[in-house]
Image 1: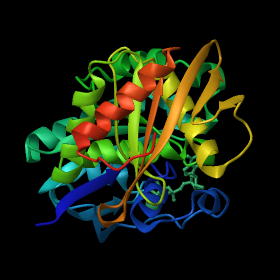
Image 2: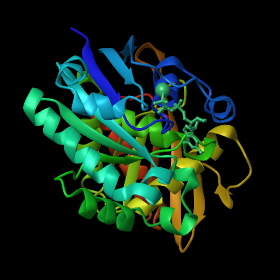
Image 3: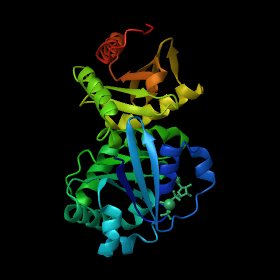
Image 4: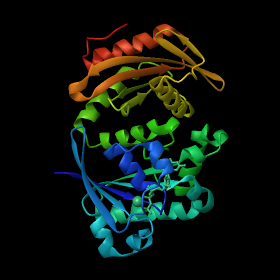
Length: 308
Ligand SMILES: Nc1nc2c(ncn2[C@@H]2O[C@H](COP(=O)(O)OP(=O)(O)OP(=O)(O)O)[C@@H](O)[C@H]2O)c(=O)[nH]1
Ligand SMILES: [Mg+2]
């Protein structure tokens, strides 16, 4: 049976745009320039995502108030949902953070009433619009949001943007959300978690043939403020743009503010299951650490064929 995903949020926050990019291969640059028409009512579409069948319910921001008030509408929208994804953007948060927090609590209450099994995920979208000083302090921003929303939401908040330099943030958010329902992603994620947990200050991800991040894992002490920078760097590596400060062959040394990140991309080349490359990065200055981690991951993934 298809899993139902419900997209909620105010008008213009980017619900339909995210749906178009993640599930229909839409071009982010194009969608940033040419906006989609506002959604009316509830638009339902079916998609496949790795081993999952999904039924995505994209709602109208204009009609969000009535959806949250009318019980008959709530049942149509929330009934049988595997996950509800509530999306807000930087403009919303800046001008109406309390209203957004109240709306999220309302959504949480409706879920408790209609179907306790439904998972609630929250996306803070359009992070390209956040001033860099704030964006580079995701920890503080997360803390601020959590204290206003006041819900237990440790793993529920994702920061995203379709701006080309951050586009991996949306692949990562959806991969984390969907891995809760996909056996294939879940087992890849588990394998990465097991590999990376003995290493400090490291992150790794696996990409598909669209260069989307299918699955990601990091050590507990990896500086989360560096995650979005690592996406930017990865983007530049895949686009072969020359913004990398130092390239010493297989590994790339990258300066991010006051830190240096060491990064390595390895081809996996498994087209039958749509796995293209493995990316590993570490804050550790020892090059050996990166190779050890990479080998451990490949061992745990049971992939013998790789280049060193
Ligand atoms: N700066 C920026 N703009 C974005 C981003 N994502 C989407 N947008 C823009 O936001 C606008 C909203 O897009 P939609 O996806 O139609 O919004 P929606 O939430 O579906 O709106 P309704 O259907 O009216 O509820 C469009 O103009 C997009 O170009 C982003 O990450 N950054
Ligand atoms: Mg829409």
